[in-house]
Structures are given as C-alpha cells and as structure tokens.
Length: 320
Image (cartoon, rainbow, N blue to C red):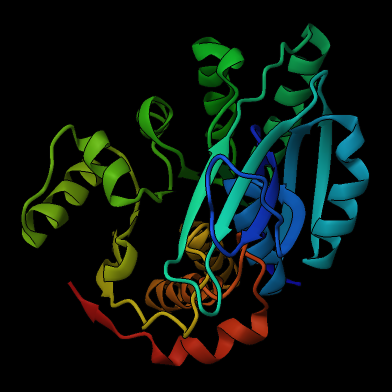
C-alpha cells in the first residue's frame, strides 16, 4: 500500500443482492441464472476501488454486528481495513435485477433500494463522532459518500460535517440533494456529483459546455476546492485550482453488463492516484479507466487492478 490514508465513511451501507435473469417476466415465478451478495453503497464501492489499486484504504461502517464477518471477508479481498460501528438495525438491502445475456432481446437493470431505519443511542452518537474526529485529524482524505440514514436528522449531519472538515484530512464528498448542499458549506477539497446532482446543486440546468464550466467555477468561488463531474458516456470533467480537464469516455467493453458503480469507481481511483502523489490529469485518467472496467461486471466495483491498468493510457485527456 502506498500514499496518504483514504478513510471512507459508509453511514448508510447496503447488502447488495445481484440476480442475473435472462428475461424479467413480471407476475411469474422466475429462476435467477446467477446470484451473489456483497457489502455495497457508494463509500464501500469507492473504498474497494482505492484498495485494489494499492491505496491505503479504510472504511468507517455504520452497520449491524452480524455484518462483521461479511465485511472482513469481502473487504479484505480488496485490502480495505474497516471500523465497524454496531447499530440496532437489520441492515439495508439493495436488490439488483440484472436482465440480459446471450440471446436475450434486451439488457437492462432494475434496482430496488430500502432505507436503514435506526435510532442511535447517545453512546453510539458519541462513538461515531469520536471516530470521525480521529479520521479528520489524520493526514490524507476523509470521504463522505452515499446517502445518509433519514433518522440521523439535520442537526446530527451538520455536526458530523463540522467534525469531518475540522482537521488535517482533505474532505471529499459524493452525496446528493440536501446533503450535498450542506456539505459544500464546509468547503470540501473535492465533490464528485453526476450531472443530475450537479444541476440540483446549481439550481438550474446548463445548456452548453461553457455553462457547465462556469457552474463549476461558481462552486469553486463559493469555497469548493475541486469539482469532479461524472458525465456518464461522455466522460468526466475536472475543474480545480490547477486547471480544467475533460476526459473522453472509452468505448464500453463488449457485453457490458452494468453501469452501477461507475461513478464510485471513478472517484475511488481518482482519490487513490492523488493520494499516491499523482497529478490531477493522471488521476482523472485512472478514474475513467476504472469506471470503464466496472462496466464489464454485474455488481459494483468488482473489477481488478489488472483490468483497469491497460485502459489508463487509452484515456484521452485534454484541457477544457
């Protein structure tokens, strides 16, 4: 492992259940051709990507005690350490119905999410605050990614954001809606929205590339250090103090299976490269390569470093 520590806060993790189905015929009894389960959610997806690429990747996980074995076994494969904060809840489940395969007329995914309903006790809140404060004081990056349990409430989330932005660690954010708007008030080092989240943050849609860049610069003027904007099949845009770069998307691999987790792969690979001392354009290339490699798998961020590495030189980076 190399570079600065990357600590990913997974406060609303899921247990993803991926079912491979040739033809989703609603109203009938179906049999999945393949299925598997793993710990998911944006933070853990990005943490796995950083870990598989050799980064010093750790996760703070708010989850049921019964998940400890699953987390240890699965995250260990990707060299991700973790601190589990036990909560009195069954855990959140995300069911992914991946439809398609050879000879199938269509390829699509249906995602069914649930919320984690929990109430933290006073001692659990104190423990969470202590762990986040400790991570914020460690040189490196503190990453807040993914949705947050609705029961935590605005006051608690604001308190966590204050703690997360109070130390040496650079605050990195991949959230949406209300929580993204709250996070930008704490002057994060970087945010990673997709286009829909970006427009929601701006409060308006951009119609041209120039308006897109101007919107990023307006966020930087308001205190956001960098914007890594995921553009789906158009690639990614980075606007930072060092410059502006656009990375074109690579062609999707033959038989691409799932776009879920591509943005998480982008963020994890970008942060890992910067944490290891790489320049930002290089980090952007690694991010787009990781997102492309992710397309070849059912499930999020289950590719390997060996799949990502050959794609990096193929990513075209140009000044924006």
